[in-house]
Image (cartoon, rainbow, N blue to C red):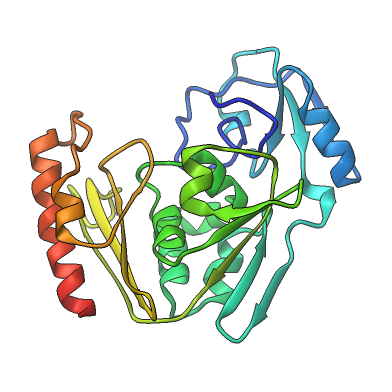
Length: 256
């Protein structure tokens, strides 16, 4: 688990989490202000509550105290042309609806089943930092940034690699050609490896899932070739590397 205070690591969202690893909490708080939430999260064993379904999935008790962020007004979505600002508690179903036809909408749709997209949140997706999260990869490929409670703004890629303060919002430009290539055991299965790509004025940015603890950003096949992917029961490191290169070439070809 990552260190607090942050909407990460221990932020309970139904995104890229192990259903059997999160125990029941022993206490619950629902702060009415951001300052109160930050103060609570400074205390030992206090964790931010995003979607919350995972907390209820395990019947084992613990010493964890849940800090529910629902009353903080962090579920607002603001759109101006292609620029979107999502509050940390914005649901993935809202992303799908607000960004129809864009990479972000497609990634949100593939992230979770329809009933659970109304539970999972944008902030929780970033906080969980799941290595297989297509939504997180889409945010990275789109150059998204995170706004935190202390006023900082950092890239999603940087935040995931070194979690900081409580996330209050995620800003992104939903514009430019995009594509997703992936390989899984079945069409509906979580991809073993996926490559998400978006073309912008700065060039093509790729984000790969299934190669590490978090999605990895790359800009060329050379970058992908240098990766040493994880190894597990769904695919060896060598197999994942082969998939990453093959899928990366397809994405770059489509966007070039």
